[in-house]
Image (cartoon, rainbow, N blue to C red; front, side, top):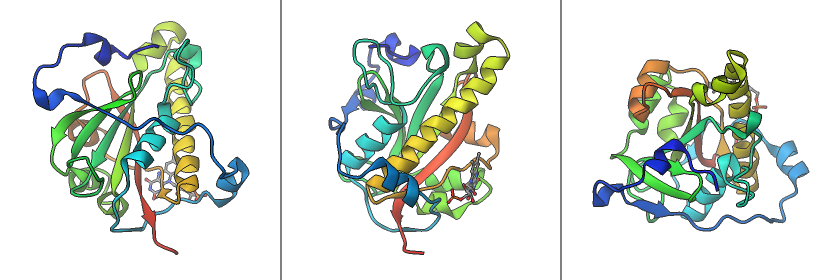
Length: 220
Ligand SMILES: Cc1cc2nc3c(=O)[nH]c(=O)nc-3n(C[C@H](O)[C@H](O)[C@H](O)COP(=O)(O)O)c2cc1C
């Protein structure tokens, strides 16, 4: 299994940094992929309903989960299997049973979450995304960021394009998985990059690429 650079650092500094295991994702289901494609729509209004850890686990796995433990290959394709994407999840107050409000980093190799910030930061993220209300309305919001150097080291400047393409593939997986779970999402690309970076808590080498607020869609 490939671990990303943060995971390989190891060593937990405090109890708060201990990682939280996610339920094992299902790799089989009755919702046909054709139906998910046909029904996929960008949803921007959600009910004030919580989602479950099982759903969260499934959504993160769809975005970047390991689907081959031997090679570490993931649910979405990656140029040179260099895996430049990082995922953070914003969890609102009482929006997920069994998970306190905060920002969490998805530890891909271990399929676990590590809290990086306490409290509900969805409103702050909404502001950074040009006040798009869908973000504050969501139960959770996945922020996909990219470490360009992981890919440009091998592919030069062209690698930057690859990272954006990979973000698109991961986001589409989230759309289809959300649809199959009866949830809704919308890919949000309109945001102030520096502010989102700060709200997510990204390092200097990471660039925010897209936001995926998720909730139970209102019937529109
Ligand atoms: C790269 C990209 C960025 C987008 N950014 C936003 C956004 O910031 N806010 C938003 O409401 N929708 C955004 N969208 C969603 C589009 O508006 C949506 O896909 C389009 O209206 C087609 O609708 P559909 O996704 O339901 O088929 C974005 C879509 C893409 C592909």
